[in-house]
Every structure is written in C-alpha cells, then in structure tokens.
Image (cartoon, rainbow, N blue to C red; front, side, top):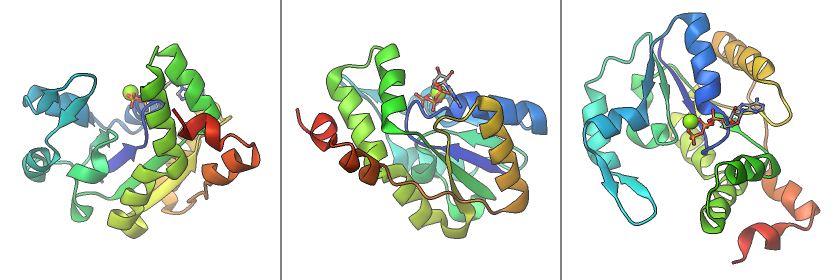
Length: 182
Ligand SMILES: Nc1ncnc2c1ncn2[C@@H]1O[C@H](COP(=O)(O)OP(=O)(O)OP(=O)(O)O)[C@@H](O)[C@H]1O
Ligand SMILES: [Mg+2]
C-alpha cells in the first residue's frame, strides 16, 4: 500500500507522517527532498518553484508501494493508479496564522498560504484527481496523537472524510478583509 499525506504548509504533514511511518514501519518519501536531490527546484526571489511536470515523470518510475509519501505537491506529481490513499490535512486559518508567524513568514507569504487554505485549493485539486481515494481530516484543536489515530483509522477503513468550510468560518467572523486584502 502507498499512503500519501498532503495539505498546505504548516498543517502538520511532516509531524504526522513521521509518526505514521514509525507505527506502520513504512519508509518516508518526502517530495520536497526528492525534488531537491534531483535539482528540480528553481530558486526565484522569494519562492522555490518546482518543475512539477518533470518531477511527475520521474516519480512515475518510483516504487511507491509500502511507502508513505509526503508533500504539498503530491496531488500535482502523483497519478491516481500509483497510490492507495491520499489524506489531506486541513487546519483552521487562525491556527495556521500562528504557525506562520512562528516561522517568521512575511505578511505576503502568510496571506497567500492562509488564502489558499481558506479556499481549499490543494484539497479541491486532490479530490478532483484522486476521487474516492482522497480523504480530508480536520486537524484543528486536535492533539498530534488524535490526528495520528484518525489518519490510521481512515487508512484501514477507507472512510471518515470530514467536511471543512473555512470560508464560511472566516465570513462569519467578519475576517474576509483580514485575510484577503493587502
Ligand atoms: N495536531 C497538532 N497540534 C498542534 N500542533 C501541531 C500539530 N501537528 C503539527 N503541529 C505543529 O505545527 C507546526 C507545523 O507542523 P509541520 O512542520 O509538521 O507542518 P508541515 O505541514 O509539514 O509544514 P511544511 O509543509 O511547511 O513542511 C509544527 O510546529 C508542529 O509541531
Ligand atoms: Mg513540513
């Protein structure tokens, strides 16, 4: 079985992947490290861009069975028939904001990443491509242990998708301007 963990920066992908990897005894393929080792990162001014087409081609030939694959680029470089299950970790924008501030992200980078989580771009793209193999889990206000438990349950039962609507939450809190204006 090949398990994929994806989601926006700061949702806890690596934290959770490490735990799952230890429990299931699956080695980790970190897509960012994989791409870096191949020299596929193009250094731009503020961001690191990856040639996802090239990366997708190379990953096609990788043996993914019995491994856990992690990265926000996962839905863009993997094929549906290569994997067994793909789990999208979703995290409340207010929690993400704290993570980004702790990481000293710039204001622009914070807004871009939070905006992307509120709109659920990675999630939308993942569900569209991987359909019944894709599951969302809301990690907000959940201990790492609880998230690990939820992920393991989804992996074994192939059910337990959670609905997430940050846009509704942010609108209710009157925070659209806070996150979407410069
Ligand atoms: N369930 C959780 N509850 C509280 N804090 C968490 C939880 N999961 C992760 N964290 C913390 O949130 C921060 C971000 O986690 P992590 O680095 O694993 O995210 P990531 O998705 O791998 O980010 P990136 O895509 O940038 O690599 C870390 O400080 C981590 O300790
Ligand atoms: Mg990480």
